[in-house]
Amino acid sequence: MLAERRIRQTERTMDNTRGQSMKKLKSIWADTDTILIGAGAGLSTSAGFSYTGERFQRYFADFEQRYGFHDMYSGGFYPYETLEEYWAFWSRYIWINRYMDTPESVYQTLHTLVKGKDYFVLTTNVDHCFQKTGFDKNRLFYTQGDYGLFQCSMPCHRSTYENREIVKKMVLAQRFTIGADGTLIFPECGRLVMRVPEELIPCCPRCGRPMTMNLRADDTFVEDEGWQKASDRYVDFLRRHANEKVLLLELGVGFNTPGIVKYSFWRMTAKNKEAVYVCVNLGETCVPKEIEERSVCIDGDIGEIITSESSQSSQMH
Image (cartoon, one colour):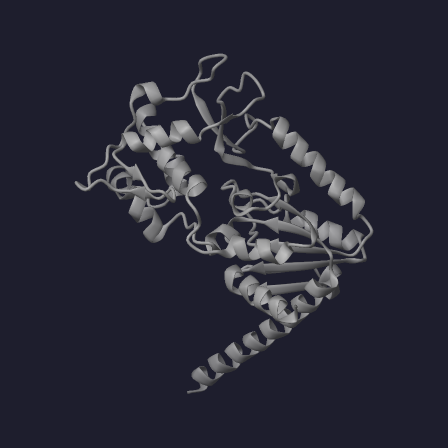
């Protein structure tokens, strides 16, 4: 009984703390015209882009059975014996995480919230959900790449190439069909082909070496012209608002690559006394004591939090 009372007391304390934080967020949002969003994997997870569990089982059960890995990330690093198998896996991976819509409308809700604000998005996500949802591409900086781009694996040059059409051919070659909304539809026989034809293997148009994804895994990552222009726009946004009232909104950022969003947001908050830092994440929120008074941390599902904020904002208008 004592343990149960303590659990209930802890839950009430957490609810009260979250309620207070939500009130603060509502006030900050209403009082801020400039927002810098820093987004990590937790945001897309909240939108339904899980790389494990049921979603992995649905699209990669055959790969799991043959190769023994249990999530998409592990499958991406598996040493396949042939490029035909490698691209069979990666074409499915790219299609469902880049060219299919998210199951939940988290990004759409966030897009509605920032309308009328002077915003910019810095993200380590490579699924392009922001742009697919309608965010202005000139206000986005995808620092770690894009599932929708190929590059030379060497690389022999600093260009990238859109891959939608070749990836589409690869998934169709595995006996999938593609619905009007982009969803992969399994064949009636239920059996997929776990390889792609040799002629579909992408090769560099200049040196002939195999192509690879434009993802930051090591120093071969290509920062192409589009990447450089996005970086310049981000730097310009920071310059224009260096000493102004700014909301630094961190969504779903963990500690895999904290230097890109989390640590830079902490530094900017410490430097700009007009800035406010808000961290929303499930099970992983923290803030340095130096900026604690100008920070709000909300431990919870991002979709639920921003949906609640969107509802409150609508009521205000």
